[in-house]
Length: 154
Image (tube, rainbow, N blue to C red; front, side, top):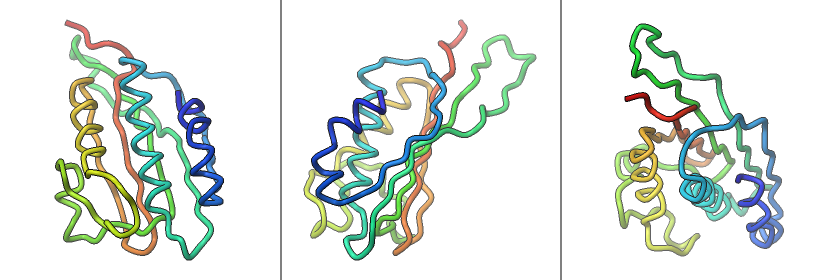
């Protein structure tokens, strides 16, 4: 899915002269179209908010599985994926608003309605996952996405 997203964004990637690196991405469980949309929004945002004063790079990868309580029969292993890039970064004062609808930062740099990250958050929640961001203004951001490795056990 991530390969399809990157293929569909070749125009903006070339325009920004960005380098995109995709690390090993283990499989996850969920609606394929929804998961593709999650990564499309995150990689698209990364492209939109690259710092135009330097060569841009975007990295997509995965971390180790989150620990799970093996004694809980309903416990589901969760995978952590990330989209990291050397963009403009998010000021600390704005971090609590990033995943709210109609919140825009750097409106002079990128177009949009400010709903992409809110949609990503809601989609992840419907899959039993979550999202968070780590960012430094002027250095870039890393968005972390947690998705189940397999369907929830009932």
